[in-house]
Length: 90
Image (cartoon, rainbow, N blue to C red):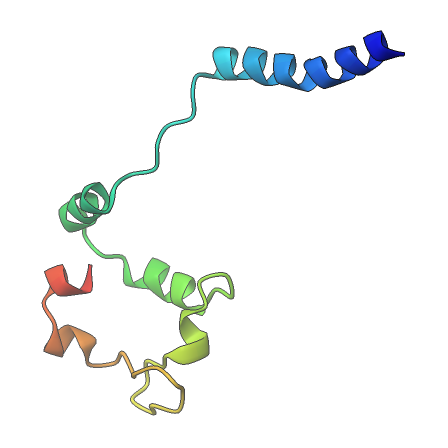
C-alpha cells in the first residue's frame, strides 16, 4: 500500500518536471518598467481599447464612463487625454 502511495505522490512531480523541461521554464512576467517601455513604443488602437474598456473582465466600465456623464463612481475618462500626457496615462 505504501508503495502505491509513493508512486501516486511522485507521479505528479515527475510529470511536472518532464513537462517543464520539454516546454521550457515559464518566463517571468514583465516588470512595470518593461511594460511601460513597451507600451510607449506602440501606437494606441482606439478600437481595441474600447473593446478592452467594455470587457467585463477588465472592469473599467463598472466605475468609469467615457461620455462626460460622470454617472459612475470613478471619474469620467472623456477628457483624460486633454488633462494628462500619454506617458502619464500609460
